[in-house]
Image (cartoon, rainbow, N blue to C red; front, side):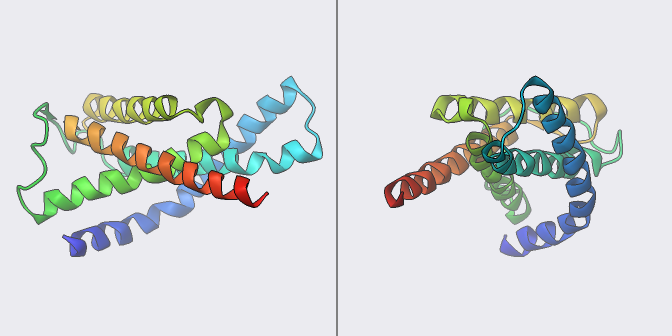
Length: 175
């Protein structure tokens, strides 16, 4: 299983430059719009780093899950819960990769957006983002719609949120 995870991670590296570039464009657009609403002071500019990292991450994630596949290359729907795990090492690797994919999402959401610093809000955002990706994959046939993917992605977001909570607590205790 680790061999498959490693192979898949290496194959994703080729999408990083495009994802970072697309994320940078999204970040600039987001901050330009936010700056139009209010003047940015020095401290606020430093606080833009989490938002920029969030948009870069979301861009890389969209390229990996959606734009890296040809339209019509995959089709189908699997609504059976836990149907992916245990079939073979390849499918087990997909399950682990889905969790890993959303850990940064769960960490970056509350760091970038104060309104998502509550467990249920961050978990719900992970769920709805995953659901949106699955629906887009189904509509464009760029991936299978799987309930397991939504569940494992949401789990990854929750794990990322827990990491954020631990790290932010450690920084508060030091300060």
